[in-house]
Amino acid sequence: MKTKKRYLVPHDYMADPSVHVFNGKLYIYPSHDWESGIEENDNGDHFNMKDYHVYSVDDVMDGEVTDYGVVLDTKDIPWAGRQLWDCDVALKDGKYYMYFPLKDKNDIFRMGVAVSDAPTGPFIPQPDPIRGSYSIDPAVFEENGNYYIYFGGLWGGQLQRYKDNKALECAVFPANDEPAIPARIVKLNDDMLQFAEEPKPIVVLDEDGIPITAGDVERRFFEASWMHKYNDKYYFSYSTGDTHNLCYAIGDNPYGPFTYKGRILTPVVGWTTHHSIVEFKGKWYLFHHDSVPSGGRTWLRSLKVCELEYDKDGNIITIEGTE
Ligand code: FUB
Image 1 (spheres, rainbow, N blue to C red):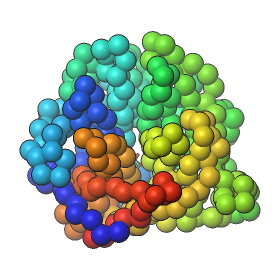
Image 2: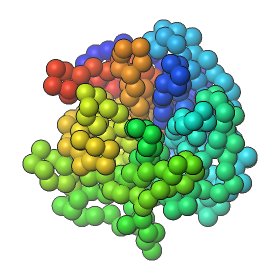
Image 3: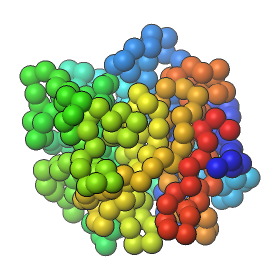
Image 4: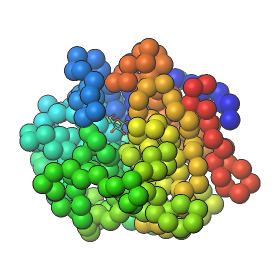
């Protein structure tokens, strides 16, 4: 589908947008890319981000975008090593909780929480990462007062270093005909600061009800989880990483399993693709990023948005990434 697209922050590099409507207003929580001079590699060292901004917009396709400035900085996080990647924010009882992945001083990704009285921050970090947290790309989903985090990412996201929530001695990738490494879901405690349970795998099935295999690289999970609901169905969406698709799978509850349905967005310019899907003022939007404005530099990405449509059966109509 060809659709009008808009760059939201043309004067800076922002990526990995997590978007929510809080009290009737739309807020964007992106990663903040910058030129740190670190050479590109498969470990993602070139994504060397160190702070977050928050944005809001009233008219998504045409309205003014408000920048609330820096709301969290690695220098204020006691356990910080490096690399502040994709974050997300949830509202509970008037407080805003930002979940962020960050490498600790041993270069291991953990997830932290920072709390604010406002959706626009500033967010005050907890002194330690969430117990039992690992890997990257937290996406928070709330339903009936229960809050869940979807997370995980391969390669630089370190998910291949974990099995059954335990760290492995070294990374393990399944054989091509084995089930792919899954994303994870975990319910949050009432205080929103710790996990309430052990993280569980998110299983994505193919059309025959068989788990998607590691060799099915056009469809298997890689990173960038997102969850939204449409017509009472649960849409789990994600990036396939090295094949650069944004895909989705549908299930009947937040834990799945989910059945693979198709592509949301074909590959964009740049290595990574990452998104969120949100309904605002009666329309659905896909927030994402690409590297067109930086001339294809994968670590300097720009925030984009376009409308998203469903067909009569609830399938998402695929959007062209390069238009
Ligand atoms: O921004 C750094 C990483 O790139 C994110 O965590 C991934 O999802 C990918 O977009």
